[in-house]
Image (tube, rainbow, N blue to C red; front, side, top):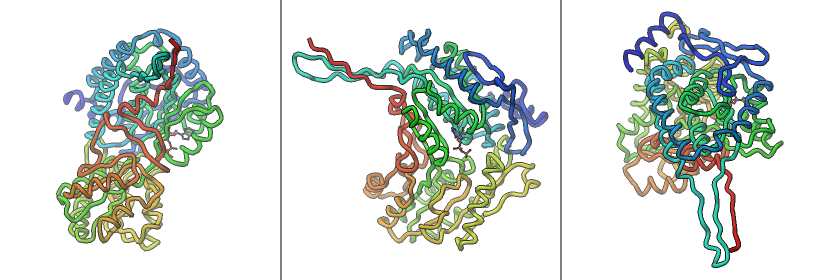
Length: 497
Ligand code: ADP
């Protein structure tokens, strides 16, 4: 693994790219060019340079992919037992583990993220396929006690063709956490990776095929949101949509889904609080807050982007956080520097605009607050790790998702004020708390509106824990058995005997 990893890194250093990257869509079991023949360029965020071309799909390619997925629904796939589907997923899990170095290096090249984070993502994907491999034959309904003259039971049936719209921040992980349960449930799929990060999803499709997936069960169409994504979510041939991305695009997807009454899971943004109480283990809280906001340079829907700290501990905590943030050196993801790049120049400009506005409005920048000059970081797209003391709760800095390495700080007098601050945005994705007082931690867990609560460890959990949001953060759950059931339609059967 490490020798291969080193060779791949050397190849990127030498050539700026990797040989053998997929170039076409993956439809009906093979790579194909776009019907239009068009391609788009992919950029390495760590250097700002293009490194490969990939097919740019549109409605015609989506049509082909949906047709392949529909016909695969009634093909050999539909006759496999759940246990046999599980075996394919388990083989896939092992194959991904064997190719882990390549997946991780490609993910870093395409998304920009630090290599160690990409390796963590790949390990999570190996685990996700193993988890759903084991779940495939444990997806059972209930039987209902209807009295002596009837038998009533429920059957979990695959929902049909599932569409996945995947974002650029966790390309492989997000694709996998939709693909694995959908396959375990017996669905077929059309996946549209983000235009910025198509490669690992295309690699995964080819690998699943090697693991034994019949042709057409998993199709991937590369392309932009307006051209390929919009065509996919509006397609009458799909039965379910899982969308992960921004609120504005999620709303568009929801409108498109309404046309054909297509089922929908929306995983949207967040502005998640990390509450630190005065009685916490300060070392653990510092580590937790740093990871919550600077992992993947803050480009995480569930980032802990709002620090809500009890006044009594605010100064020592902020001193340490500022020191740690200043020590994070920006650098190419493959060098595994302190902090990686922002995925695109457009996103970098968005992050900078948020902070510039906040500064002008009188919020106090404690550290960072600037784009890193390209000459300092090899031409890539970097933003300095930033901590800002918020003026008040209503400020857009506190209310809006920034999706970058920007932590806002709210200082509160006590626990009750911390709970109120935690609930004071329109998002409800995750919320974390650091305290030694377990009664308060549990009170926090019960009174804060969020899809998941982390007590004394941010991002704790894994594939077994359902994940999703409330309010503007969306609805429906990925991961866990709840994630599997989102790819099923429940049928009730009652017999008179
Ligand atoms: P961002 O603006 O940060 O790129 P988006 O939420 O727009 O985030 O993108 C998430 C995913 O949604 C990407 O795969 C993108 O191509 C896709 N997408 C963008 N616009 C649409 C749309 N109108 N319909 C369906 N998918 C879209």
